[in-house]
Length: 416
Image 1 (spheres, helix red, strand yellow):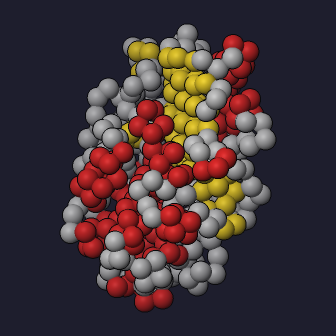
Image 2 (cartoon, rainbow, N blue to C red):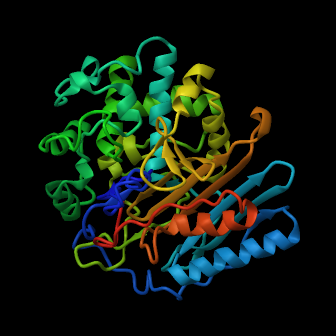
Image 3 (spheres, rainbow, N blue to C red):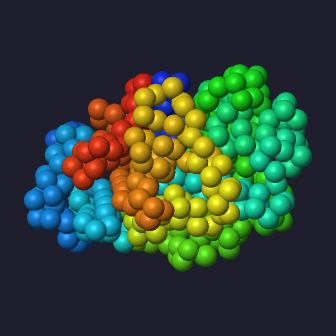
C-alpha cells in the first residue's frame, strides 16, 4: 500500500508488502541547494507539545494514547503528528502533537493540510469503478482499449492494474528516474514521461501471476479516467468523488501547489542524506498514484465512504473488496484498497509526509472505527513512522485488530 520511493518508492520492501508502502527506491533526493534542517530528525529531540484537539474516549484510554504517541514521537524523532480515532459508541480522539515547523516551533494543528501519498490511489481507483458502474469501462477490459502504447497492454486488464497484479515494472524503482528526481525534486513530470521509465523495462511477471506494488498501474488508471471521462483527472475527482462527499479540503493540485495552512515536511531523501525540507517539492511524479492533498477531517469522512462503497454500486464494491494475498501475514489487497488485520484503507508516504487512512468495518453494515494518521516527516527510524504510530494507537483501542505493516529495507532511508 505504499509505493516505491522516489518520493514514493518504498524502499525495497519484502515482495509481499512492497505494495502498501510508498517508498523511494534510492538514497535521498533533495536538491543540493536545499537547506539542511539542524537536528531535524535526531531521535529523542522531539518533545510533543500539549496536545490540542478533542478527546471524549474514557480518560484512561486518552491518557494511554497520549503517552504512547508521545513515546513513539520521541523515539523516532517525529516532528509532528495529527491523529484521529473515531469509534462509534465509545467516542473520538482527535489530537495534534509536536510542531508544524521545526525552525519557528509553530505548533501543529488538526486543521492543517497534508500531502497524503498513496492514499491517493483509493480516490483514483474509485473514479475508475464509477466509470465501471456507468457502463463505460469493464474491469476485465484490456488497458489497451483505453490507453495506447502499453507493452502487452492487450493482455493486461483494468482489474489487474487496480489490484497491483499487472506485472508492469514500477517506474519509481528505475535508477534513471531516481537520479532525475534527486537532481531536481521540483521539476514537473507528465504521466507519459513516468510511463516511459516503466516501459523501458520488461514485465516483472505475467499479468495476474503475482502481486507487486507498482505506481505504474495507478498512473495508467489515471489516464484511463481522463480518456473515458473527457476530463482532467483533478477535475473528475473534484466533481465525482470529492464534491459528492463534501470533501472540500481534498484536491489533486497542479505542480507543487499546497493549500494553506500546512505543515512543513521533512525528509532525508537528499544527495547527502541530510534532513531537508520537502514542503514545496513537486509531487507530479506521483500524480494519480500519490499527489492528493487532504486533511484530518476530510479523511475521517472519506474512510467510511471508501469502506462502505458509498459512491459505488454494491456489486462493484463487493468486487473491490475481494482481497487477495500479498505474501505477508495479515495483509491483503483488493482494488485500490488494502486489508491490514481487519482494517481496510491505505497508507501513503512521499518525501516529507506519511499517512494512514483506514476503517474497521462495523457490524450489520454500520460504520466502524476510523483511524487517520498524518505525519510531517518520512525520516523513518525503526520502520515506517506512520506504521509505528498506527500500531501504537490500535494496540490500545482495537487490540484484536492492530495496524501493522512490514518495514522496508533501509535503502537510502527513504520511500514514497
